[in-house]
Length: 314
Length: 266
Image (tube, rainbow over all chains, first blue to last red; front, side, top):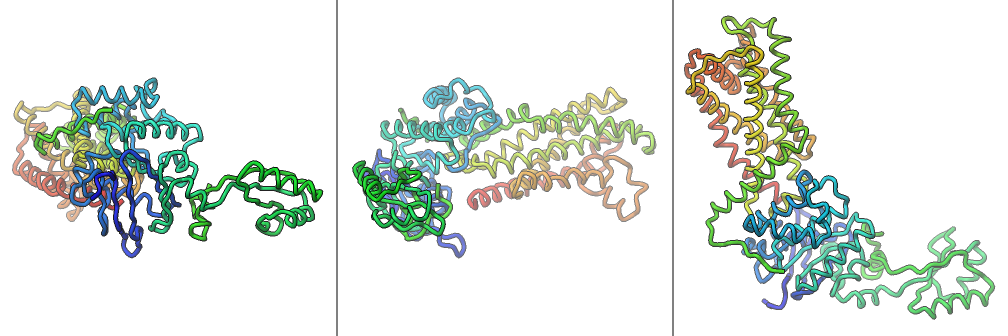
């Protein structure tokens, strides 16, 4: 087994009753890097994370975390990992500080080190001012930050983040991203699942796209986006006549349906936008509205699997 | 950042005790911070005691003993049942929220969660019983128990409360929603009513009277009453101890098994 990989998964399968949830996942994460598992709801992201964090037994295949086999060395794996699950796992009736001390004690730190570590983490996660308040008074973003802080109580070498920003407002999401980048700078290995291409793009060294329990793509964010295609210019016209004219002069995709007055044109550089507008001006039509759309998870799925991501769209 | 490794030289028993202590501390904090548990612990039992004493007391013939002296052991038993519904709710809540999932990904003993909840329940029972005895004394409760009688009565109540708390924990594990947990625990509250806890069963129809006199909750109420009032205990004390001791022996490992099964299922 390669010591350079903090997470090494080969041929991982798992079924629940008749349903095959994982159909042979291969995944390797280099030490100190962040790999994002990207996929829609039901793709098998959470099942993978739960197996890697020893919450679920693997069906078949081999999974090693920090060099330890998840099936036969669960205790060693647990001592090596932090987990922030999809559900926030904090105690609402305790304060943020009490939550951290509690978890520290359960991670078997001494009373003194647990308290010291709690204060350190509150500071690090910008929760020092709210540290003595009951968690039920916290905002969603604060709860998430506390949740993340708890999974770092023992400064584990490997961290699992299962959709850490789902349900957060954009600002809180940005805060979480900043924190995760800080952890990477400290040399932590992170496996992050997400439904958001943008999140993978922002954080990941490599992106592994899974769908229906199998890996459908594996590469850097740039490689992935190249497969998906460039950004697109979306043009909306005031009537069907203008739309038809524009469609004739531009190398655009067909309108999406009857009554839809929007054309979508791939644009890679700023000069492409100028070219499109020049061509339109030359034919005498003017778009009512225009904006640039970035590739979304839906586009990735459309390209990679030929079908729309279900439930994962934004 | 510095990695602080778990101390591996200690025995697993040491860590089981450590984890349980930490989680008992957590559940004790919960008592003071949840109004619902405080109401169940302090207000409801006292209200029941006062209500039975003044509303029903005059209409119920308890022979030589006054009604308040008869009923206080029964209300204590009812209060244990009432208090314990909060344990079902709390256990269910923990199972549904992510926190048990997190505990299981940590190098700790998962079942310590249940120990924490049961220990907190025992604390609530103790406070609740102390308050009831205090209020009882104010409204006419006149125990004739000696020191040893008190010790035996409280010991028996402790065994009973411990057994009921583990049963409540099991119900909490089995429930699929928090509301469901509260519903599942509800029958526990009514078991004492079909017995000798609150009224002498002598006027009940025969088939019901046999059940009412011999069901395990009645055995506890009758034993505690005899000990409080210095009347002959007979063998009800031993029967009560056998029942509830037996339930503890069965319920604790069962709770552990259900916990492990449920926790891996989710």
